[in-house]
View 1 (cartoon, helix red, strand yellow):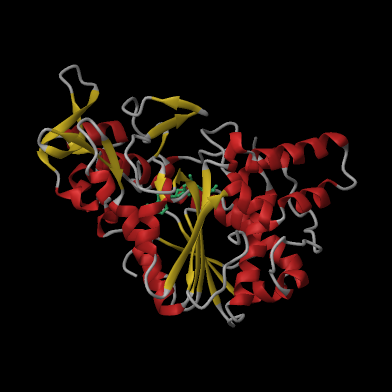
View 2: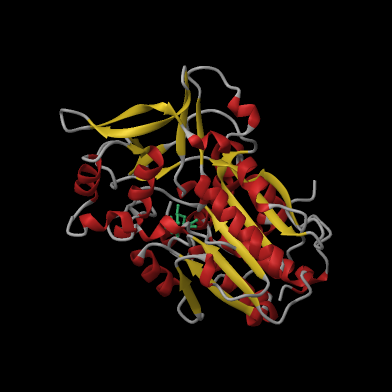
Length: 410
Ligand SMILES: C[S@@+](CC[C@H](N)C(=O)[O-])C[C@H]1O[C@@H](n2cnc3c(N)ncnc32)[C@H](O)[C@@H]1O
C-alpha cells in the first residue's frame, strides 16, 4: 500500500478522541554528543572520490583487506552520494518497502496529537524543538503537523521543526511534504538549537550499522566481507578476538560456540546523544522500530528489494539493509538518573491506547464502503499481531519529572 493512493490528506482530525488513559484536558481540547558519530563525514573514502557507484567503491576498498559487516552496512545505507538512501525514494508499491506513516495518515496524526499532549505535560514551553530522525518522505511529520493545526494550534505555534536526514533526495521530498511549515534540516543533533525537545524516530534505528560477532574457539570475532577470487563478495570471520566484545550484554557474552551477536555502537551513540539533550533541556524521545525487547543472540541483518528478501552481498546499494533494533541496548544508553525509559510496548498496544480505532471510525464516517474497508485494512496492518502490531515496538525516554505517558500506561 502507498499513502498517496490510500490516504487522502487533509481529512478532518477527530476532536473527540477519548484516549483510554487519564490524558487530561490537553487532549480533550485537541486543539549530546554527535547524533552521527565522527565517522559520518566518510572522509576515509576520499581516495575514491571519482568512483561512480557503490559496487566499484566497495571493490576498491576491499583491495586493502576485508571490512566489518558494520562498515559494509554503513556504506550501503548512508554513503552521502552513492548510498541507498542518497540515490532514491525507496518507499511505496513501486519502491522496496512501506513504513507505518505510508500505510495510513492515522499514524502521523496520532503521533502529532501525542506530541501536543506531552508538550502540555512538559508545562507548554513557549518553544519546543520537534525533531525527527530519518523522516523518509516526511509523511509522518506532515500528518502530525496537519492534525495539530486542526486540534492543537497552540502547540503548533510553539514548535520548531528539525529534520535529521542524510539523503538529499529525501530532503527534497520532505520539503514538498511540509510546504507551508518552516523546517530546518540537519546532519546531526549537534546543530539542533538548545531547548526542550520532543523527538520522534520511526524506523531510524534499524538503519544504523551493526557489527556481527561470531563466538569461535578464539572468542568473539568480527564477521567481515571480502572479495573472493571469482570477484563476488563473501562473508568471512576474523581470527582475532574483537575489542567490541565490551559491547555485549553479559548474558549474551556467555553464549556458546557458533552463536552470532549483533551490536550497534552507532545506535548506542545516538541514544547517548539524545539522553544528553534530554538531560540538559528536558523533553521526550519516542522510538518506534522492529526489534527485540532485550539483548539476545541471533542474526537479523536483512536486505529487502521490491518488497522481497534480497541477498545482502549481491548488487550492494540496490536494496534496503536493516537489522532488528536491540531495545535493551538503546534503553540502557538513553536513560540515566534524570531520564527514564518506558516500554517497549507493542505498536498495536500503543496505537490502540492512542485511539486508532476511534480515529478510524471518524475517518470512515460518511465514506463509501470501499474506502471504509480500506481504512479498516490500514488499522489491521498497523496493529494486528501477524502484521506490524507485535514485531514493531515503541519505547519512550522522558525527563523524570513527567508522568507515565499516554500509550505506556499498563
Ligand atoms: C526506513 S527509513 C524511515 C523513514 C520514515 N521515518 C518512515 O517511517 O517512513 C530510514 C530513514 O533514515 C534516514 N537515514 C538513514 N541513515 C541515516 C543517518 N545515518 N543519518 C540521518 N538519516 C539517516 C533515511 O534516509 C530515511 O529517511
